[in-house]
Length: 152
Length: 178
Image (cartoon, rainbow over all chains, first blue to last red; front, top):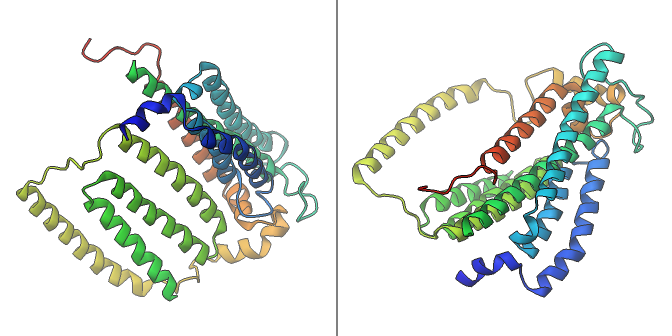
């Protein structure tokens, strides 16, 4: 176990790295599907966002804390998170501007059971998904950075 | 109905083992038993939305908890003072008595399981598809009828993550004891 904690900075074995690299894309695709079909099938912005964050976290766990710790990545994660919540508030205020009240469903409802239907609901789902994914990846990178800092 | 009680019993056992296990890895895994039993309860109660979220969040939190245990210590460092324990048991007993008495009275007033008291729920089920156009009624409720809650929830998540990032930032950190 002592070896295990010391080796995390350089990542796990080649097998784990390869499997994680292959699986991460599929997990992310599944997360995007869950977000995009949130108004049709079970799931939605929060669940899909956490799955997308999980694909990044799988890669970071396989490749170790040094691979995760990067100011640029943290900046991107923070940007995604901020853009997500900003988009949600913008959609909410658009309802006040173009509709009658806050969070009014301004877009056309479309045909039910189609991907482009239900007005603002898929838009808000995408915004929440981006926010949650950015938030969890950002927290994970922050923890990895703290871990590296304490080791120095 | 009996399988529901089996899962609930597994949850209670998992929670008790998580509290009492001397090895912290065992405690974390028992917590996982508790959480994943909740997934099956959600599936049994026809709530796949909650089941998806619970699976993912439980997995992520288990990873983070195991990483924390591996980095610190595996032994439970709980101090076992006798007076403290007696006070704890007395407090717990008192709370359970009051809770059970009030729950017994309240349970008689409540409507049956699966038959909500609010008339609004029936209107959501009937008019949800027509009013919002969303096939998933859960999405219709959380992002249309009750969108204020979701907006506030997303804002709370944003604020807490900004707080974590500000507290754990690398810039401007002082060395301990310096």
